[in-house]
Image 1 (tube, rainbow, N blue to C red):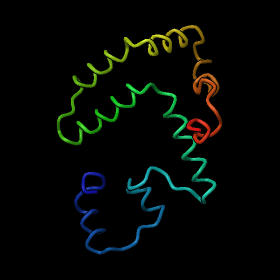
Image 2 (cartoon, helix red, strand yellow; image 1 turned 45 degrees about the vertical axis):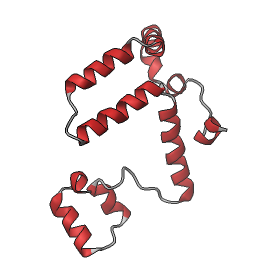
Image 3 (cartoon, rainbow, N blue to C red; image 1 turned 180 degrees about the horizontal axis):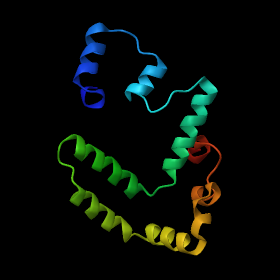
Length: 126
């Protein structure tokens, strides 16, 4: 938590043990977003999971490793560029670049981006 919100705020929250509401938690960066209710939470989670599921496994693994490396003090632009270079030569990356060149700005629409995935993340894993 200290790395996330800074030592002063972390110390205050931990020593005071006070509750933090969803608005403050979002403002402090403790959460990425807050849901209004259970249905809204399901929508947010499904949308994020579906978006992540579109990416090749190598991209997801590389991104997670890059973040971990930065947290450990081992991250660097050079490492990230080396990973990007490796991923750029994969078949799926070449297909994505070709589709972008062929379709231009239309490629950025939701239907093209999601590549026909189901409406909810639950359907992806069933």
